[in-house]
Length: 101
Image 1 (cartoon, rainbow, N blue to C red):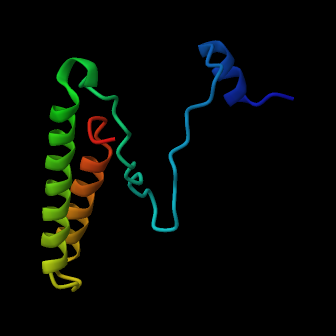
Image 2 (image 1 turned 180 degrees about the vertical axis):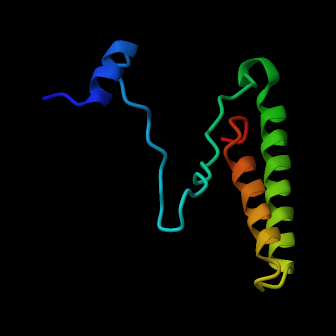
């Protein structure tokens, strides 16, 4: 036997129930950060030339190396954890660049 709520929902013509939010043990937790997606390459080696492509790759590698050295220079303490994770995210973004791959 349907309840009053079911009859009311049918009169409103609501077919799909609302989506449920993810709940963790601490309550409503924030969503996990997604890893950077690999982007498509914006340069064409045939048009740009192989030398320019190699130059772009070397520049990316230098940026990654500099960020890694900066990250290693930060002492691994609880206070510095946000700075270290920020550097890691920057490195991941550079590595996911389509022109670098």
